[in-house]
Length: 497
Image (cartoon, rainbow, N blue to C red):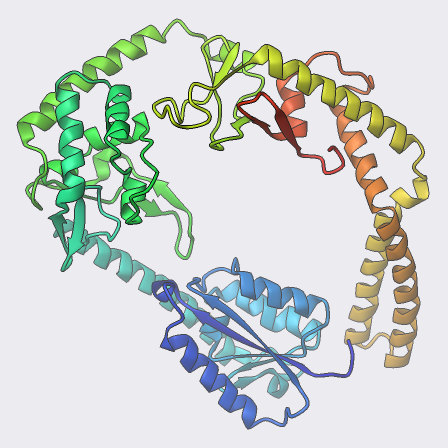
């Protein structure tokens, strides 16, 4: 670390205000700036980190991770926050940073509203007062989360919680669902076509021919392009009870407090309120369509009972790997995996990839040939690679650990400042030399690692005779296939081109 003082302002805004940079961020920034102005920091370099819309119950936040990484690199001298809850609401993790990490790297921590400055507690952790603050912030966050969930549930049970992203055919007006006639006309057409015996595929074709925008495109208020409907979208619309005026909520829930991970809730646990809003579809029509779809589903499921899923998986070597180079959607295989076709544009005659098909006999030999060529190249290149260069990374890691240990000894008082600087200088010289070697041999190292991975896959035989699912999954990310039958492979291994 150089002699320049680096002060980091950290600002966090909670999940509820993640839509924009609200006054809360501006107020936090103004408070920190006023406090910094009253400190003797005229020569300090001030940097700012902002997490807008992140919970304080965990440290999976981009700005805080960037700040902590700079601390570990010794590039920050002081951190200032509005209060400890802005830094974190998790008692154990917050205490770990304040009591272990920051003292280890000699980082001063200031919490303005808590009247806390770690310089006032040198050789101490802050005592019971600071520990209680950790606990209070964590319990407050948990209690607040429970209250918010309870409020959402109460509103949902009363039918008052209406999402802005409502079902296609509706719009949110004054916190209520109203019919959007332009989109509702398409919904009515879909139900009428289904009632008259049209399959989902035929409905998609008619909607495309009439140039009716898909739900995603309609919500963006665009009218040009995007008329390619998918059977899955039609299926979801036809079974959605919201179109008969039923309010539905609670389809998903957050897994843990402060987590962004959601999980799907079983339909038996959904909140449903009949006659909640104006219906687009009459009950008789809706349930008649449901009855027809149930019969179709039974027929389809019976026809698939004789198909062995395990055998299909073995034959589908290129599962989810082939991508249409025109529309960028996955090419779907036929039942025997002899042909892959672009099903996305199957209803769009004016698209370049309309009815585009490619035989597996055209794709698989080409991929196998390229893999064999890559293996030969990698084997040849890695055979000339010096062993000492391959171990430079391990040496760098060992030196970094040694450097960290020396710093810990200096912090604990086992060695003095002059001894620390001398040992650190020796290590830095060695590190610079090794990093130069690593930079020059970076590509060679990648080749060696790639070759090692390949040898494991082919059991060290050095030869590949057939294309397997394991081989494809290990080496290939995507294969773009274009209507002119040309192909482009995106490899998982950087050195394979």
